[in-house]
Image 1 (spheres, rainbow, N blue to C red):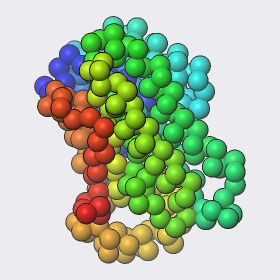
Image 2: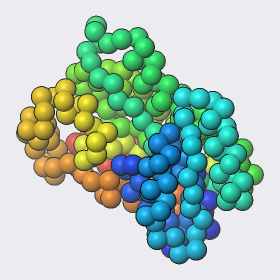
Image 3: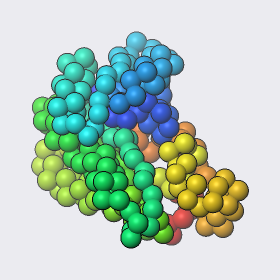
Length: 252
């Protein structure tokens, strides 16, 4: 029960890596609230959990809407009696080469990935400070460090998340609030479908993965989720401002 007593707000955790992390948070003793724009999927995830007496609920949250984020944070704090852990999973991929990339798509990618991360921390940090400290975990991507053709907008937004995480970690260190980011590589979730299409389909993507990933395959959400558990736990109490890569060895 590595997270016994923790009160975690998990934004964008209805599906994919976030869902896997929600399961592992509850399995490790945390109270959780999943805040997601897809409320039916969030409620389905909550219903699937083996709660063991822990609090687990779902609320609506559109990370593009400041009032929605503020209200979701306030509701989560009220339901759990506080927040000491914020985990942000919400993301958006829109791909295309820079000279053809629509400015509206650029704005949308930044609204969800970068601005959404900012809004979540803006409203959750006061509750974490009130709890005496805790952990903020953002989700960037290996693309935020390396980029790739056709991924300029997404890479730029995820790079902004990394920079924001490092700066916020320094800002909040005196409050005993640690801030770290998880950087998944190729993980087998529908979130990567736009990138797979850009690469020419499943077969072409599989060939690329075998060539560039030393472990020779995609990861699974269940293989990424334990990093979030670790960063939320007291085991990582001397770790802040870090980028935790889960990428099968791609960044080496």
